[in-house]
Every structure is written in structure tokens, then in C-alpha cells.
Image (cartoon, rainbow, N blue to C red):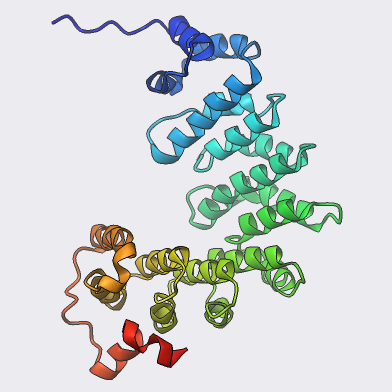
Length: 332
């Protein structure tokens, strides 16, 4: 059988821009564009209807989130200047794991976009650079302008709360001397949403100083706060959070339970592994079993299989970490 001919790129653009529906499989042809192909794309992009442009870039962002092999960065960069805010937002969402620091100035520019949602998306897009700079994967010097821009944006009195939240969350991993004070200020505010972002930033900082606060917030009356506190504790990775997470696993809210499973996976180690294993065998946690299985597989993949039959705990300590469903009412 003759090998199927590759469709010419102009024909791909015809299908994407003018077809009755957007052929998802052909969106992958927008990955790793040559200079000539990018020129063809940009020349025609402005003539594509608004909703079609929005759908295309949103699809690309969704693909980029699931597939780290594709490279739509030139398309996303071009869409940073699209007149439709929804397209700019989708393009920013698409560069969530971008490694090239050359894109930073363009994202920083969008921190001053006239649309609040675009500003927030730009701040969120910079969070990956802040984190990878702390990990040593990109030079801190290259990311310093982004950190400075985020701080300036946060400090502006006229900055909208959603943007301040995104800026604080993006700064969470930064080893900047102002960060602890910003987190404390946001956590002490009267704005519950800012408090949530402060808790998020506590986790991103990986600073154990925040652990007592997070353990307290796992008992919050607000579901959103319990979720955020569990995730943040997982990000910090201290096993001291395990007893409180064990209790929180009994929470009636599904999202809280999923956050606990995620936290146990991030903390890892023999004890967390055994906790997850026992939850996997308990029908009370049936609705969490898929997530638990994924977490166990992830721990196995990262560190090899643990011998959870020997975790270095005596029976009394084990009882503190694993709460039976029948006992939950007595403990509340």
C-alpha cells in the first residue's frame, strides 16, 4: 500500500479555518511550524472569524496541557496580540510549561492588558518561570524582570483582586524577601479569595513555617479552604501533616478527598504509601479509588515500590494516621 500523502499545509489551513467543523487531528500540524508555515498561518489568521479563532486556540491550549511533545509556541506568541481577549487568554494558558525565557517580555507586557482576565492569565503564565528559576532550570537573572513586574502589579492599588490573586500565586515559589510578608498580609485580609491565594502561595513556597497554619485550615468550615490547605500541605511535603490529612480523608466532600490523595502522593514515603494502600482496600473510600490507584502508581514510578508491610510504626501510631469510618463521629 502506498504511503498516504501528507496534506499540503495550505490545505490544512483551509480545513482549520474554513471547514464545517475544526478537524482536531489537523491541529497537530500547527506544531513545530517552519518559518514559511508560520508566515502562511499569520497571514490568514486575521481573516478567521472570532469564534473560530477562539475555538482553535483553546483546543491548542488543551492539547498542550496533555501533550508535552507538541510545540505550538509560535502560534501562541502570535495570538498574544489577537484583538479578541478570549484568544489572548487561551494563548497564555497554552504556554503554562514554556521553557524559553525569550517569551517572558511578551507575557510581562500582557500584565498591563486592558482586560482583567488577560492580566490574570498572564500572571499565571509567569508562575512556571518563577518555579523553574527556583529549581535552577532557567537562570534567575532571566526571570528577575518577571518577578519585579509581578510585585509591581501586586502593589498597585488599582489592581483587581483576581489579578492580585494570580500575581501572589505566581510569586509563591520565589525566594524573594518580600514573599513571607505578602503571604501574611493576604492571609490576614478580610477577602476570603485572597486568603485562599495566600494558602496556595504557602504551599508553593515549600516553607515549613506555614505548616501549622495549613493544619488549622484543614478544619475550616469552608470546603474551598480545606481543599487548598490539603494541596498546600502536600506541596510542602512534610510528613507532620499526615495525621491531619488522615482525618481530612474522611471529609464528605469529594474534592476534599481528592486533594488529600494528591497531598499523600506528593508527600510520598512509606507511611503515605501505606495510608493510600489501606484507603484503596476500604470500601468507604470507593469514590476515591481511581485517584488512589493513580497516586500509588505515581509513587511507584518515582521511587520504586515500597514495602508497605513494614513502615516503622507501632500500632498506636498507626491508629493516629488511619481513621476508621466508624470512629469519625466520635472524633468530630
